Picture 1 (cartoon, rainbow, N blue to C red):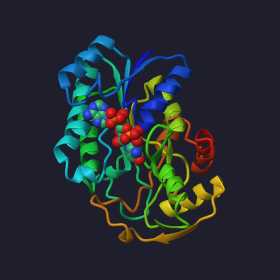
Picture 2 (picture 1 turned 120 degrees about the vertical axis):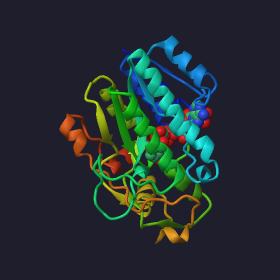
Picture 3 (picture 1 turned 180 degrees about the horizontal axis):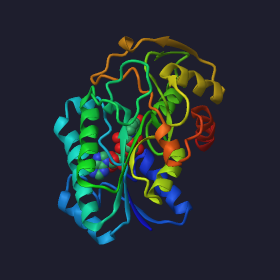
Picture 4 (picture 1 turned 135 degrees about the horizontal axis):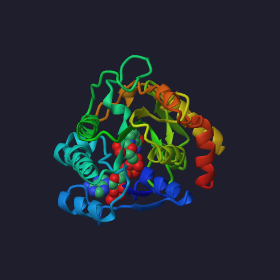
Length: 281
Ligand SMILES: NC(=O)c1ccc[n+]([C@@H]2O[C@H](COP(=O)([O-])OP(=O)(O)OC[C@H]3O[C@@H](n4cnc5c(N)ncnc54)[C@H](OP(=O)(O)O)[C@@H]3O)[C@@H](O)[C@H]2O)c1
């Protein structure tokens, strides 16, 4: 099996390539230089030449607030390029694994979303990712759509790194406690994505680490595990106005993984222990 991974310079793409290599699976992790998602013809000819059996599409426009002002570029990367990748997958009969987001849902209430629940993205990024999903579903039969949330990995910026940095020069922090979801450790997710690549159990899945928390709970656990003494205060989202609306409810049901016989990811607190070790904390 030969796998092409987009977004090698990002958090997830980096760990997916690492996991594939550890399993001795032939793969290539592409970067913006040789594989610009907005240069359609170059991108398609790269794929035709490499001829992968699977494309794991991790690259995306992920600047959620900036996307509200940069709608065209966000759509070109998240929707149009995903459609073009799906087209070339169809042409060479490759499987496609498309990484999506909890932001496709309306984000209200307290129920756990099932994959087929009503979609109502609340911001530009979420809408463009949903439209990417729809393009994949329209073009391909051999696809996995994997929705994740609150991602952390060693290769890039994330909430954990932000909290650890802020703690260096603050003795008090305020963190929102009315957005509930689940963190996703890229090392754990990469294992599942490789299992999916090797299977033909196509479909739409939710895959985060197990358990739910608020950003406030997450911050408290980060400081507890890192042995950092700091005063953390819970505040509502209204204390941190952002350009893009964030969902209050990002709970996603993982029953779909059980039904297909895939392993769920470990608890998020356990993932955090291993991540802090990876960061040498
Ligand atoms: N981060 C989260 O909390 C989160 C939550 C839910 C879902 N997701 C989804 O999970 C996936 C992985 O996220 P991540 O956190 O690993 O993302 P990330 O760290 O922001 O990495 C994004 C990757 O996409 C590449 N990219 C962006 N625009 C490109 C373009 N025009 N051409 C080629 N490459 C381009 C970036 O390249 P450069 O380094 O050159 O910019 C980078 O390698 C994405 O599909 C994202 O939508 C993420």
